[in-house]
Image (cartoon, rainbow, N blue to C red; front, top):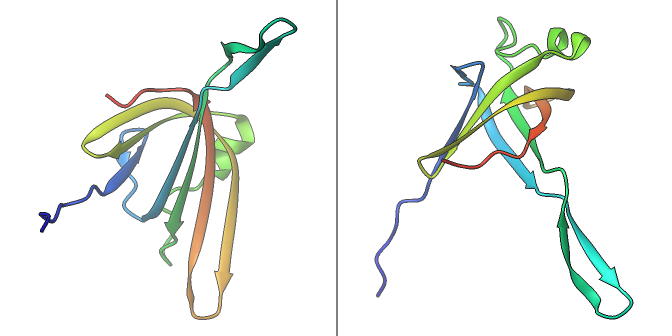
Length: 124
């Protein structure tokens, strides 16, 4: 019989403020590895490309106001510092907001999905 474990939760900060209404976080780290093919070796190895982090935060929207209003950031291309904590480790990067989706429907909370892109950053 195996012992049960406690599994990690996560949290996200934006400009050093905890995003309390976050319902889910999706962090995609892509090193943009490029395969190198040669006539003599076929697959010869890889070339490391320009790595990026892509982040999506799904949030609930309180009736009083947005916890995060991405519009002013998107309009001028302002960078924000985003931190993601998973398994008691944090990754922090300066990122740009690349889009926002607003959703309202019957029998469901109003939600906001914000997409970010920035440099590849390690968990520390």
